[in-house]
Length: 226
Image (tube, rainbow, N blue to C red):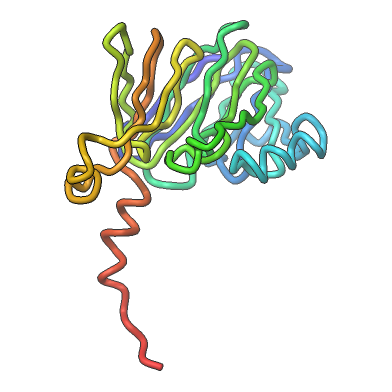
């Protein structure tokens, strides 16, 4: 299959063009914008009920996914995430897993497998959640985020980013959660806790944080008297 990303980074969408009959794409629930009418759709539990329930409860993904199958060459499928923001595509290679923040998965080839990975106590302090999604196998993988997505190649000096902006990172990276500066900076800088990544690999971060948007909008909510 061929694909291209349109309307990046604010209202990103994916256009998939199937090159031969039988090509398939597994898509997050409600992510389809449109498709050729002859493209076959099947809804199911990817990996069985227990695996799907685990991803739902721990990884923030939908219980059901949709599998789109081409019945002829040249058929197209359009996808987009539920929230305003960006989409990134990665050609996953066997033996090099990619880790996604909770809720970031959009679509993938059936040869890409998803599982959850426990993050330990540090998960309490990261925007990624207590569990990450581990994508393994080979083939195209699409993930999304609120805001734009920016890729950073992390080297020997490491990289620091806000916990709420982590979208995905490659298997060559590890991270620890620390405070930015001293106690004064922790409480008064507006930055709080950060993820300090080390190793060699690629990190994807979002330019916006849904939690910050909620905090910004909260004072403008109409107050109701008792």
